[in-house]
Image (cartoon, rainbow, N blue to C red):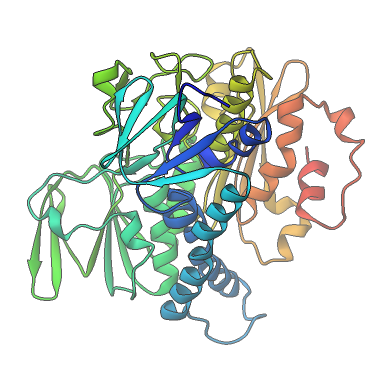
Length: 444
């Protein structure tokens, strides 16, 4: 424990970039504190992944019923008030549970906005705290369009606490949040229009797959407007009109899903020389900033890896190991699975299909129709496809799938991608039958 400073390590932010790794520090005898200006747990449990999947689950069930061709009889609908009450009940448990667990591990909490005074000193309101090392884990916030009528726009945090289903909803953007919200709200009974800046959704995914997902959502009733530039929003009685170069679109609720911005503001980074830009904080291969005793983890980082909860978890654990001297090697990111929680799902991991297509001398791509597998009929799936990417040594190095079970398939194949299994080695895995994991491995 440091005698020169108040704490050995202070984490700025109490999300996954902090709490997944921090207990190992106190277990090793280090003094640790979290500084949090909002809810403990950060975006994911409070206003992101956890809240989203709780609301998405009923949407998936209703879509399965529609696909069942009458096997599941009756007219299903989402009682949004009950769904939202259930979401709040579950989500409201997280901040207290996380804080209690961290305090039980010996970690202190300081609430308020942190700002660096020097490289070892930080102020939180009128309180001054010092530490030998800091970890900036402040995450991101929603980008907001700067247009006339911007006060009528809602962000993802608002959306995940929406108390009723609007008759007409306009979603601006074409990333994860936009398409996931469109899928949920269409299932909930809203008339959904998605306004896109360009003509491709979901950067980072192969276009043949994103186009297929958009077609499926369009078949469900989502209207996509491409190559649009938003000009203004006007209030008309109880509703609104979104004006763009492509036309005018009526709405009762407007979701601004135009991206997320790293939380680097008002932290005093300029004053102490921490380098950052609009993409996030710049770090070296050890996740150290330009000030060596200050690290950064999670979504606030400038990085090529997906800005996801599991990535932040991996980084927080790496930083802690590095601080403790248990891992002196540069960070070595594993294959990271990522999923768009629409119905159907779009998921991928490892070498992307785009990269494989651009390097045909290095990779072989096997395209599959997932409906060739009888097990897909069990849950009434109607369509789906998968691409498996192999290197020249015959090892699976990447996968992308569009289906109702895509995330489970990617999880099943992730060990093969990360550890370089060949088809012969995969035959050693005798999985549960029947299951989606068995089907995924059996069809490689």
